[in-house]
Amino acid sequence: MVTADVVVVGAGVIGCSVALELARAGRDVVVVDKAAGAGQGSTSASSAIVRFNYSTFDGVATAWESLHCWAGWAAHLGTEPGPGLAALHRVGAAMLDVPAMTVDRTGALFDAVGVPFEVWDAATLRDRVPGLEPGRHWPPKRLDDPAFWQDHTEELGAVYMPDAGYVDDPMLAARNLADAAARHGVRFLFRERVVEVPRTGGRAAGVVLAGGTRIAAPVVVNVAGPWSAGLNALAGVGADFTVAVRPMRQEVHQVPAPPGYTRGPVVGDLDLGVYVRPTPGGAVLIGGTEPECDPLQWVDDPDTVNLNRTKELFEAQVTRAARRFPGLGVPATPKGIAGVYDVAADWTPVYDRTDLDGFYVAMGTSGNQFKNAPVAGQLMSTLIQAVEKGHDHDADPVRFHCPHTGHTVNLGTFSRRRTTNENSTGTVMG
Image 1 (spheres, one colour):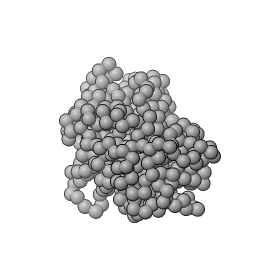
Image 2 (spheres, one colour; image 1 turned 90 degrees about the vertical axis):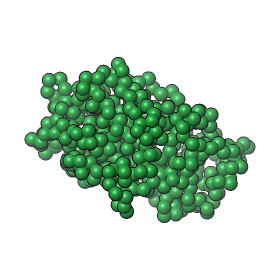
Image 3 (cartoon, helix red, strand yellow; image 1 turned 45 degrees about the vertical axis):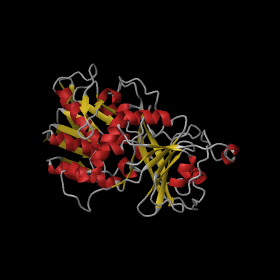
């Protein structure tokens, strides 16, 4: 039998961050993951965009605090800068103005948090984003809808975030966090699957692995990504969740950048239903933003998901991007990645305790929490320490003080029992 203070299930970028922060708080931590190494699950399929537009103050404040961690990544890890660390590329991001995410709403939240931004009109978009055509096409349409091909009659603007960008290697970022955690004594058990969450005295008592090994611990943290709902079922928790969480298949495609666009900025285009992100190698990544016209690919078993790219999604996403960037070529052969998101009904994560004492969740990250991973670990560590000392988080939500920006984040925003966020875009944008 293995003993520990905490078992973290999941070694993705958020699981490794949780482990690091708990170890920094003096806890003896063991991390279990079914993969062969850190960040090899849904983290590896992340587009790793760092932006700040969310639909709540606490979401924006968390993202803004996280930027400061990425900007000082070596310091956050407690190590020296070097070539083995993930890097933030501060290329900026332009979020196009649509009814689901208006300039006024976004700007008001940015003003409240202190996020620098600019409001661009169509002419500025043309000037600042090479090759972009700022026609308004709202709402997004399928390629087989004749209206998709109609010429636009109006133009749109955008909110521009000069400090936004992307992290160049999401798996490396997870490994960086895992290495930092290991330096604080965290033990990692890879290629191991949890099959049982035993209880003692009405609380979680650790986990049992498929090979029979029991890890005895009074605290278990479920950070299992697309497998998190299954782990909740093993633990017998989730009945009091007001926010459903389900796995969903996604694809991100890579094509040569349109002329002049190689340095960005990132473009969030809910008007057409895609986002576009540059890469260091002169290509662009193109992903979808779950427009209402597209069926969502919900998954029952993440282990059976087809991780091969499909022609249908490739053509839909890249053709939409080509409407925004007419110089973008559409290659004959798809290139990119497929993965699985862990999606909450309102696309806002659940960072919370459960009705089983000692069992905590960091789940429902909805494809938009990679950027928040450094702070997510701090949020969870703060929450766990408070609750384990007897604080009633459900009645009086724990607050987290952001050390870089000075903001206070109300962790009730991420409660499992919250009222569904009606201001959510209903997409990966949160």
